[in-house]
Image 1: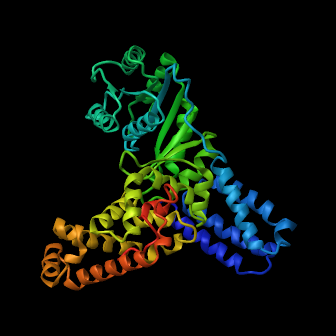
Image 2: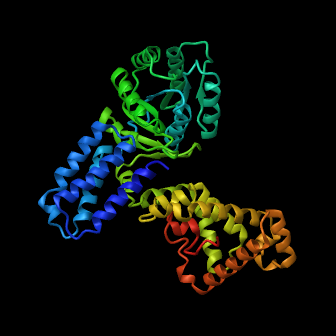
Length: 454
């Protein structure tokens, strides 16, 4: 996950500060020196780091901080606020015209940044908000680019306009505008050609498209894993073509995250969305305040709740809540809950958003993921009757299930025992089962406050 290394280092710095009853100016400067090194190692622009550290230091050595009863907490508060300012302060939406007009969005970026997939993801987001988007295949150079857009558009339920690879992108875009006007579509999204690096031909093509179609929004897609190169690319696009916002992809990978902290400052343009995975649904709106909280180990409960609301089947959650209250919870229900956790990115993703849990991520989340896989294999090796009626379990059934799932029978016994204990606890403490009380919360996700049996 992006920012892991930076988050760990910053949290260690602040842990030392919080341990001191009173801070001196020297304490603050020593801590900020470590913060500076951590930011540079995260591939944040040197110029951006220099400005950031100065802004924090100017505020942190003031009398209000050094004389505070909790100076360590005050310094963290200042760093958090300055991180938010650095990344843009406010969440920025893609600017759209009124629904009875056509908004033209031009997607730009280098090859390999995930531009075509991201283009389809944006179309899906806009469709969910009630818009009628049209995807337009303007990349006539890369083999299979048009087909890739058609496949992704189909997955999102969004139509794709294409004239093949024998027409100029400008003419394809004009044809798409006519098609959109005739068919009542109000957002035209151009998937333009990328290159392996910034070159004059690509820039000229983008400039021509903007001039010919009166593009409303030019959105640049950059690969966060390229670090400072992503910032440099964004700067060049802003200078030569002009951009209105940036989407950072691959923030779920082994990336230091410096691009997210530098782009706004370098280009003056906001980060609109961040890509957190390969699936078409893995595109999150960028909230500077939430990202700052994640970096500083404060969690991101709002994003976690929103993720739950998007992924959890509320009807199933209500049914599950009723089953739990009546102690009718079975292995099918448990399997459903594990699938809900998977949809939300797994245990590591959930823990990274929970306050104070970030530093525990290496403690047991990897092992929990493995355990979840084993539990799933055990449950899938049961017959439908066994899954629906846990009381059927006996020695011969457990032996068969162990063979089928490739585990030792002791693991089957442990699951059965913990599952039985969980059911007893549910029966004894019905008041704790908050599954349906808070829509979209973790109670809804897990169907209640019970411990996972792994």
